[in-house]
Amino acid sequence: MIARLRRAYRRLRLGTRLALGLGVLSLLVFAVVGTVLTTYMRDYLERQLDDQLKAVEVGQTREVASHGKIKRQPYYGWYAAVYDVTGDTAELRASSYAPSDPGPLTALAKRRAAADEELLRTAHIDGEGTYRLRACEVGPGVVLVTAAPTADVEETVEQLITVQVVAFVLALVALVVIGRKVLRRGLQPLSDMASTAHGIASHDLTDSAARLPLRAAGPRAGPEVEELRTAFNTMLEHIDDSLAVRAEAERRLRRFVADASHELRTPLMSVRGYADLFQYAAANAPAERDRHLARLRGEAARMGFLLDDLLLLARLDADEMEVPLRLADADLVELVREAADAFRAAHPARPLTVTVPKEPVRIRLDARRVRQVLDNLLTNAAVHTPAGTEVCVVASVTAGAALVRVTDAGPGIPPGDRERVFDRFYRVDKARSRDRGGSGLGLSVAASLVRAHGGDIALTCEPGATEFTVRLPR
Image 1: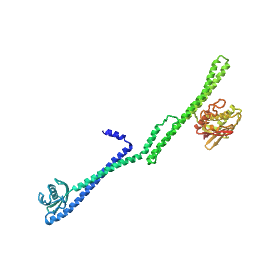
Image 2: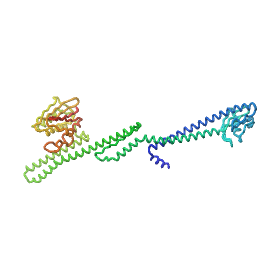
Image 3: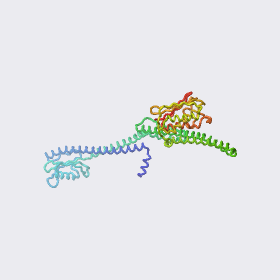
Image 4: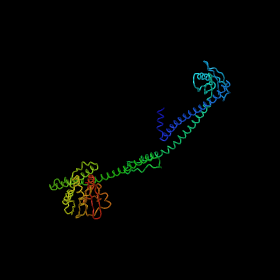
């Protein structure tokens, strides 16, 4: 039975459970208040009755001392009796309307004879009810016992208890009903947040374009509810941003796979074609076979370079800096001169201007990777500009950083392509022709390597001038 009640209680809503808990607590408070009030009222009425007994006793004492008899009955239902206690027993000398059972009065008179102070007792008289008894000595060996009924006191206490029970029950019902409504209104923001959560659960979050347009809203409530609502909406914003990042990552991954497949398909088709030619030309002259083998090696080397770049980018994305970077102190000026010499050897018809500081610029870096960055930028300038276009390399030092600027006087980059030139496999030539441009990974690799060194690379472009600025921290 208790387990069933517990299960039923747990199934109740939070507002109902709080209202019931408030009702139980109020019931305990009402019980304590009612008990204290009833006890105080009973004691107060009994003290008043004792004072009345004392006042009546004073008058009866004078009457007994003057006339040797008891004055008439002071109040209806009250008793008074005079006992002679000089002997071993208490003998009744006078009384006013003696009760049918004077035993309690006689017993109190005997106790008074053996005591040195006035006595007060509450006793039950058969056939009469409960009485308050008071015994005092009015003379040598003479004891006066006065009895007052407590029926009025008990009736008043019972009426007080009845009034308290009715008032407390009404107050308890009103407290539970009104408290339930107040709690329901106060907990409404929680219900709204639950509805928002259910609405979010109904969304298909597996879609790559899934977003969370729902937010918890409503009128201002207490600070705790506002704090919870703010935390809930912050969590939704974080989830929404994470979904957006995931969708963007999936979109970039699909584009990356498509671009990588496209870039690898061309050399693979070339390898297949040259292999077929090699099969048919196997019986031909050795020079023919050597030419096909050279082309096969060239396409294989091209795929190797592409895969090396992809592997480098993957390691940089995974923050495996210790794998691609081997940091050591190196002279940036010397690296710029070496890259310029290699560029002149590969493109002798290209005018190249190099401006570097006279003193060495020592920086902790991976010389091979920084040289790769410089080679990519210079090759990019040579590939995407007409023959004879001037290229300029300038190295300089600023506070806390070293700068290398690669500038060409070519036609520049269209405005719509400037923000995406560092994306992987992105090429301004949408047709992806092989007469101009490579795989579209050169600038992406350069940007990733510079970021791995803690620096950045920026593009400044205007008609007749395209400048890439590499900043490396010193």
